[in-house]
Amino acid sequence: MNVIKQVAKIHNVSEEEVRREIQAVIHAAMQSKDPQVQKRWAEICKNGKEPTPEKLIRYLSEPLKKSL
Image (cartoon, rainbow, N blue to C red; front, side):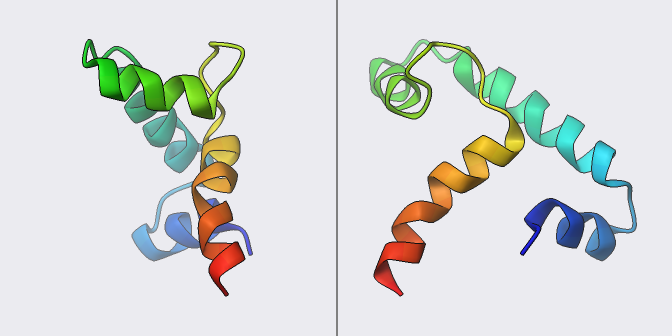
């Protein structure tokens, strides 16, 4: 299942636009000064680099997959 493709289709935009929007949100969220937020990002991206939208989606969907 390609979530980005599905979102693009639902909103009648390109997949690239969906990726750009998600990446912009990731970038903004990673700038948070909140220690709890920074701790969470450190768990998500161990190398300190911004994850790709696909990587973040995979990371966030893992608990759902395990519960099914």
